[in-house]
Length: 266
Image (cartoon, rainbow, N blue to C red; front, side, top):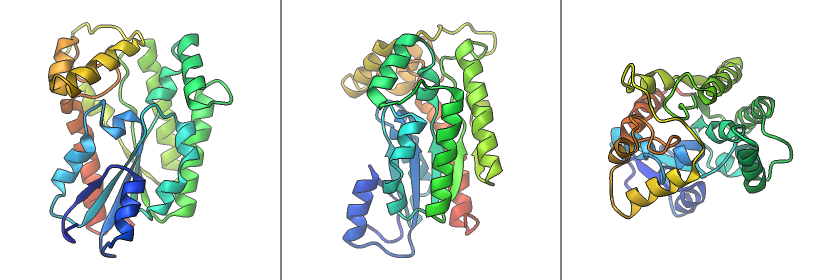
């Protein structure tokens, strides 16, 4: 890799392999922790957008997003994040924690797929996020930025988005207790929505996610086009982000990275 250029690594394992083959000590490392919204395969890849903004800087951007993760799962896989010796970590987690409370069917699905020992609740989310932040603080010297959870469905007054709001209150409080940065992306996303519009309701329809992913991966439709075809403006499938929404997160994260690059991240 060029010593003075940004590089995106698809996983902590890929980054660690590259480091073993030679890495300048002067390079910074930023690890992005989260679920599919961070992974950027079935959602807008905002990490690539961040890297483009900082392409001339010696920064390693490490994608540690895992599709389907809840906060509980992130807390269990932090060894790989710690091993990267990050200068900064962003955390975007909670969408699946909220979705898992939508219905008994969704709860059963997430408990089965994610190995949950108990029902997903706001209290269990609080406990897991607290554990994540505590581990990163205790085992690294990284600056941490917590990113607000995006809306689920575009009806901001829906019961699901009332839950999202409650989870974000907990998320912000936990970050502020430890002096971590909070990136308030919700307001920016909401500004992309047309006032007075009635969006289609969120129904936890997993087939929408599958269809959107196939439309992007096989038919090569843009995330923005997929949103429009589904009657949406910010989300592609009621959960994942289109590129307009991804740009909101990329901008907020880029400001955080800029501070790190200027020596204010430590």
